Image (tube, rainbow, N blue to C red; front, side):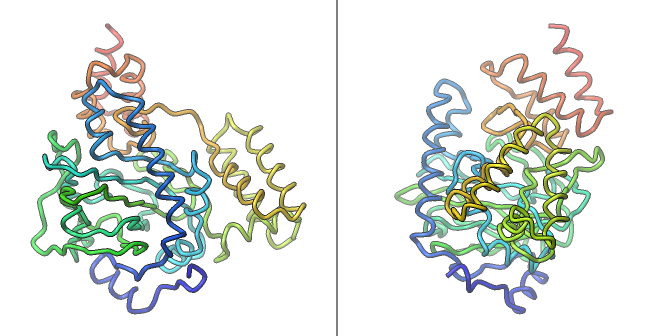
Length: 372
């Protein structure tokens, strides 16, 4: 099924007009089982990690499980699917990276806390290369009863004012005038831009709702105004070719792939300066598997190469470097619970200052913290 997937001219027009498009089912049920199992495992781990804090309620009801490509080979392989290469190629161009991936689970919920309020992803951060998009894949049947997405066609034309919703712990904007409740079967994808307003109601169904969100951008995207590198920057397309093909040819020493392969590894070394030896070792292991003709091992080792990262700290269920809005960081800092350590608080404020070095509120909060 995945080999036949393509974006049509009609879907392109719908995306340009509405800011989103829903594709037919792009994956068979069997292709999604391993990904859904990986998400369920990550959810169980998350709930086991924190059982006495306010955040544990969110871990149980509405966990956001980022960067599964680092912990699950099934997720890493899925993130490099030819389906996403076709989507990124159609809407971004011949060169594209996986910027972010995150699973969204909604538990059955009578309190309404699994609601995602209206928001635009682009409100969280201004990107140097704003041509980004997200693919939200239904891993269970999704409808209004169990919390399917609601989209606002045409909202992608402007960025709306956002504010912090302290009850739902999320940035939110006013509900647009024109909204459409989606219904999605297993394996369907809603593709939407960073400025397309969307929301989802609580899960009033009978079992958890599973979705997986993958965001793509031009390579080496950076935040503004700091120009700090953003996201995981996992290559997906180079010169219109799927990254698995590019890296295989590079490992085999084929001349046409040398420039792209060298650039990918050099970009990783610049972005992860403390991991140069790990990058070289992981590529050597990958090359050995490719040259041996072991497709299964080479796939796993390529996933391991692209999963290399710098150490990060998780607070409130998300990694510090995933945060991109210094104002939102300061608001979050003001509501941290007692279980958050002094060092975690410090790192959170340092992240705000990395994004905006002259942020007065972050500087003031850091000065007070360091006096304790």
